[in-house]
Length: 352
Image (cartoon, rainbow, N blue to C red; front, side, top):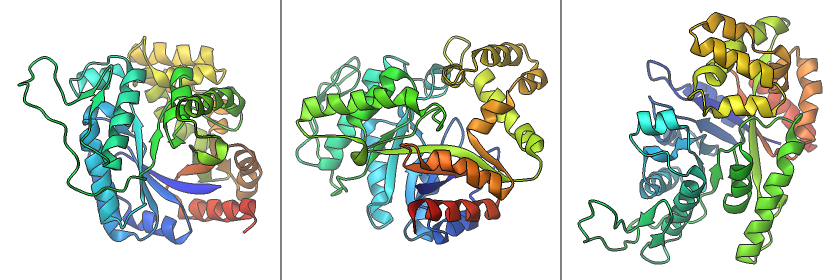
């Protein structure tokens, strides 16, 4: 199993743990992942890291589709990849939610599934650089000819000779979007996937593979596809304390990161079999009773998506991840010793 290191997005003040990233590279980690919400962006840190690392892949986990046009996303990814020496950038894309899309970016929510399809198709055409880009999409078209258009646009082809093989991965979790991910993407950044619910998603991805083959005529199956899940990792003798530290972030996302009617993190928790807890967390959080919402996060839910405890417990529980169809695991930790343990376990599971 390949390992990644999660950096996420910055808090109130910009920081980048360069030494931790360099350590991950020394330990043989395959990738490092940034993110964005409504503060620091996902691309800029990768450009910085490209200059201070040599091999590790640079992934966005994820850029928010509404934050930039498909052309701008392709330009930025291709520029960083070229600066990094080539074949290092992974372009992870997600839609975020209506509150951020419309409240922060000022873009319409529209039809996310259709919008992602158009976005990915345009990026692939730009990277391929086979001809001036024309895309007649249902949600996004190039050239633009809609309201406010001057009517003077013409198709263009990138000046920069881009790497046409920059992989596009999608951050998705609903059935419709997971099927689409299997169809149009090179990899998947799943929302809510653990070894304990992997069977739920497997047929959705495979349906996407079949649709891809039907449309392109080229076979597509699991060996052609990467799946990068993530897990909190902490070496500790106090499991309760580890759970306590994880609960506030889960309560924030399930309870408050999204509207009452559209919250993908809450939906993910429900899919994993914790529907009653998800409802209570959201109700309490939106009522301003955040401390009570935090206490409602089940420890079993946290344990399924994490590797916590003494090294032997982590070693034992890691095996479920290694035995699944998950090809990569992004480690969320600030412990150098946890990073070292994960590198050791990954080598053991691969027979190295």
